[in-house]
Length: 300
Image 1 (tube, rainbow, N blue to C red):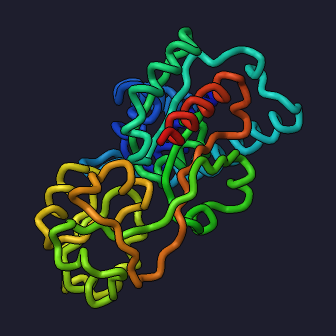
Image 2: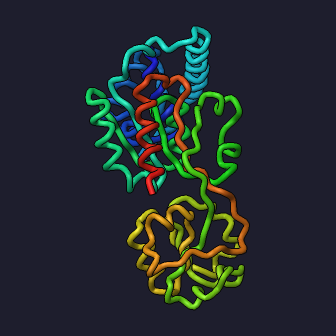
């Protein structure tokens, strides 16, 4: 039994998919299946039931999963007690960067170029995923550095204090929510959008936004939630749609001659555009990537 097999078992508990787990580990579905099959042969049990809808743990597999969690936790405790990672002094062969922030997408060409110049021997793997996937990837070790945009309170609601203790967090920028309308819209003349304004118009959500703040009655409007900037601009420019996003995203992506950002009455929480990484990812390579991302994001 190897550590990488334990990580695959832990990851499959989250994805229930050999294909998704393979993508997270930058390998093929065949390699994941082969590694799990080797583990099953070694233990002489069947760990997973496979079907068209995904994979599920057998009774024996559930026991293996619990043992994998305990063994991985013991491995992390051993590293912490020794005060170092055995590979800490050597540069990593590759760095995995997971992103959920739309802001980072716009800066990605400059980030890739700068990292390639600073660390030419290091492979950089970048994947755009959801915040939940980022969190699990950081905790199970399949992601080294992550960049996301979340509303205040997300971490407290989604991870335990023990899990939080494994992560290093750096808030790159503070932000807030705004409602973007077309300058030709009747709403553009208002200084503050009311609940009535926002309840009876179609809406779009660009980037990260706490959708539950729109209220419980979803029948009174159409809600489009995606990161396709062109669609948000087109729908909003037609004058019948309100686009909810963050103030920084508005400043960065919406031309001021066409769009206007307004405050609104719905309760809002501040945003954090944040860098995360595992505390055991302590090599200078990770520091370089953090610095490059911070520099590119804070350019205005």
